[in-house]
Structure formats: C-alpha cells, structure tokens
Length: 159
Ligand code: RTP
Ligand code: MG
Image 1 (cartoon, protein in one colour):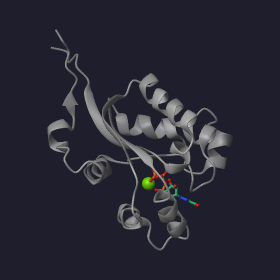
Image 2 (cartoon, rainbow, N blue to C red):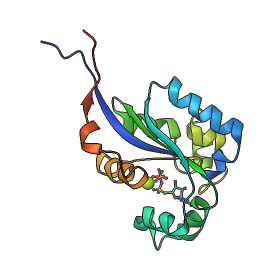
Image 3 (cartoon, helix red, strand yellow):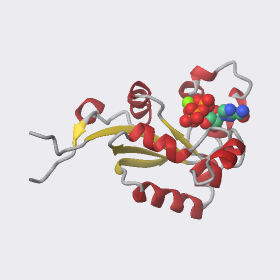
Image 4 (cartoon, rainbow, N blue to C red):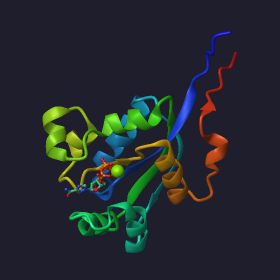
C-alpha cells in the first residue's frame, strides 16, 4: 500500500540576537515559520553566556570570525525553535538563504538573511546543517527533549 504519511524531520532553528532585538522582525520571522508549514515542536527565548557560545561554535574556533561570532551570540536574547517538517533541515536552510548577507541579497533576495541580515556575522538565523548536527544542537538548546522519540517520526494521518 502507498504510504500516505510524511516523515517529519527535526531541525534546530535559532533567531539570532540581531533579529530578536527588533520586535517586528521577530514577529515576522515567527510568522514566516508558520507560513512555511513547519510544526513548532518547542520554542524558547534564552541568553547565552560567553562559554555557551564558545562551546556551541567550537568547530569554528581559530577562524577569523570566531571571536566576534562568539561575542555576538552572547550579546542578547535569542529564540530557539525545534521545527519539524518533511525534509525540514533543507527547507529551513533554504528559507534562511546563504550565510553571507550580501551574497544572499544578490542571489536569493526573498530569503530571511537577505531581507533581515545586517552583516555576515549578524545574519539573523541559524539552522542545523545535517541530521547529526540537528541532534547535537537540539540537545544543546533543549537538554530535556528526547530526540530519539521524535526523529523521523511519521505525521499522524488521521485515517
Ligand atoms: P549557521 O551555522 O549559523 O547556520 O551558519 P552557516 O552554516 O550558514 O555558516 P557557518 O560557516 O557555519 O558560520 C557560522 C556562523 O558564523 C558567522 N560568520 N561570520 N565572515 C564572517 O564574519 C562570518 N562568517 C560566518 C555567521 O553568523 C554564521 O551563521
Ligand atoms: Mg554552520
């Protein structure tokens, strides 16, 4: 029999401090998530200490932008979401657009970073880049959330 239910994939999305600082931008981005058929599984507002930021971005330590990235991400409140959608990791990254804001404005003007990003560091949003990253990042932001119970879960079909 054909499978009618879709497989929901979890991703970790973050609205970074530059966007949370502006209430209208935050509201617009929340609405954008809903308009794009993501299920909001969890969300919360939080502020990082510098050491949280350093730990989360450890893979970038040594890069020229590491220090300003770490400081920026601990500079004010952000909003973290666990989102679910079929192919959710790819869909959220497509919606964000390219990392570099000026490239985003040139190549994909309808994306979040193109529309709201300020600089290549203060680029409005984060999204997990793989299933492994999503797992790690969801646990980082939501330590009480049981990823295994949700990963690749089928959407209820109500038949
Ligand atoms: P993210 O991890 O935040 O989703 O972004 P990404 O994969 O698109 O980009 P990545 O290369 O992993 O960089 C992580 C974050 O570092 C900041 N960044 N600043 N030239 C710069 O100043 C620069 N390059 C990267 C951005 O905030 C980027 O999202
Ligand atoms: Mg990345």
